[in-house]
Amino acid sequence: PVLGVVGEQKTKPTQHSVQVLRSTGLVPHFLACRSQEPLDNTTKEKMSQFCHVPKDHIITMHDLSNIWHVPLLLKAQGAHKAILQQLNKPPVDIDLSSWDERANNWDKFENVCKIAMVGKYTGLSDSYISVLKSLQHACLATSHKLEVIWIEASQLEAKSEYENPEKFIESWSLLRSAHGVLVPGGFGDRGVEGKIAAAKYAREADVPYLGICLGMQVAVIEYARNVLGMSQAQSTEFNPATPQPVVVFMPEGSTTHMGGTMRLGSRRTLFQTVDCITSKLYQKDTHIDERHRHRYEVNPELIDKFEEQGMQFVGKDETGRRMEILELSGHPYFVATQFHPEYKSRPGKPSPVFLGLVLASTNQLDMFMQGKHAKKTQSPMPSPTKS
Image (cartoon, rainbow, N blue to C red; front, top):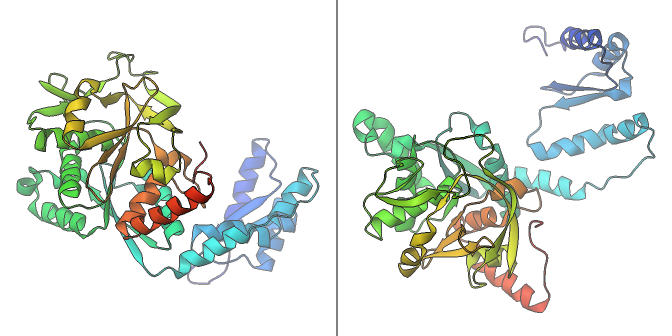
């Protein structure tokens, strides 16, 4: 820390932390010190003396313009060499040229992609950290700055117009200002009607939409109500007695025990056709493997009705009874997945459906798809993410 009045870096808090650590029997070999500015040499020498850690093992982790600079900062201080030496391992040269390019480009992007995140935990952005990082990965790949517009789903609901009209108007104004809409996963009925309203807006206004897990289920509920004419369509998660259950509890699950009843881990999704946006984004003709975390699913008894009205379930599980991916015919980009694609997104390898959302939101999707199709006809290319 730095005292505002004096402007001097103080080492006492770090000394105390190391002392407490040693009292538990743990002896630190390295100190990674967070600070606003780089540590002074005198500060490092003082910490080395009083914390009994070599000076070259004290790593400064000061504020940077973006997180992509962190690996470069560590390398510049020789952190990788010091760690390998401590572990008695031979030195290894690390090529971080791609990270260097990524970090510098992120600071230079001028075009902005605005994505409305319609959720129920928007007060704590870390609740959606994987989704947020996936959007960043996609924006990096498309040379755009990311601007996330956080929208509390419950503020989009009709009752909010009377209970909190200012928030209602503000939330809808924010939603309409976005280039794309993302509805992430979640549990419980709070804010569900707001998510359904967001899916309806995106569908009718031709705004790019990505729904994940619950985001797929609310898209199905909205479509059933407003296109199929099923006015009482609902998920049995929110109304077990609904007369029109379009989302149901998985048959192999338990409705009485909450622990250990979720469908978890990597599962295979089979493409029903190669003539769909998702297959082209993944550059896969047959199947993909993505991670899951859910208890409810689209009612398989109603699939024919949905597909007759233009909602296509282009990805299904190996039994053909569990819906994994949906797309809307005639929409610029309306994609929803039962799985969680954000779990496999990486810097330099963005999740294909997140990439598709950002591309569609920045009017680049058609050009991208044409380019990928041309390359694929010449020679097969690897998928943007590892299956």
